[in-house]
Length: 269
Ligand SMILES: [Zn+2]
View 1 (tube, protein in one colour):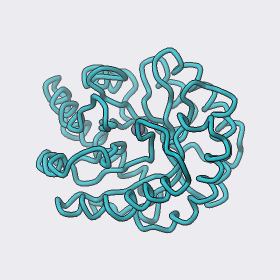
View 2 (tube, rainbow, N blue to C red; view 1 turned 90 degrees about the horizontal axis):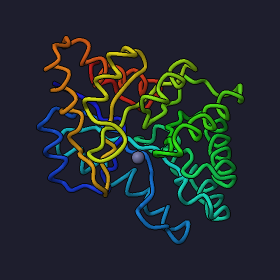
View 3 (cartoon, rainbow, N blue to C red; view 1 turned 90 degrees about the vertical axis):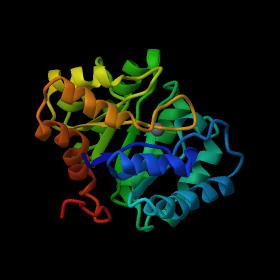
């Protein structure tokens, strides 16, 4: 079955992974900018990273017939360095016209600090100024509930933000309802050791339905599984769900959300 991975960090993966994903049915992917595992030292290092995301990765993906899209930002983990964050935010517009850039992301909170909130709001300003969609990272474990509430409040209080143009990722059982109720799109991240499993994602689909809901692997440099979406497809098939339901979650929904950008080429059309 053809599917789209709406959140995966291919800069951390090998070309063999592209081949495997293509064989498993992945036809398109979106790669938000994220933390490298260490703090980058200068704005130049982000400029090179954004060149990799807008130039090198789409070519690598195209070798396997996969369409590669991206989102730009400085990650919340690096927001404590406020001056570097501001330099990066000021540099991002250089890349916003690149043909595979869908918007600003993954922005959000990590430890829910004041500096993180400041830099989050400055990214939101950038998105509004350039009419960009937004992809949100919500924090992990004990910080998730409060951080998700803070993010949703900041976005909802800004009347310029249209929630149907915002994807909130890494939702879990205790955050998904509020994200959907407030009109945002929600993404479930399936990780081998944290976040959510294919089984829990299937449970959430059964509980909350398929409207504005999608699933991703968030495959990156840590313990993660780039083929998590095929695992979810199998889980849903084994539970007896229809092809239409599965296709809505893994293909139609991301296609519909991303289509709001002129740059996204609908694969079905
Ligand atoms: Zn991510």
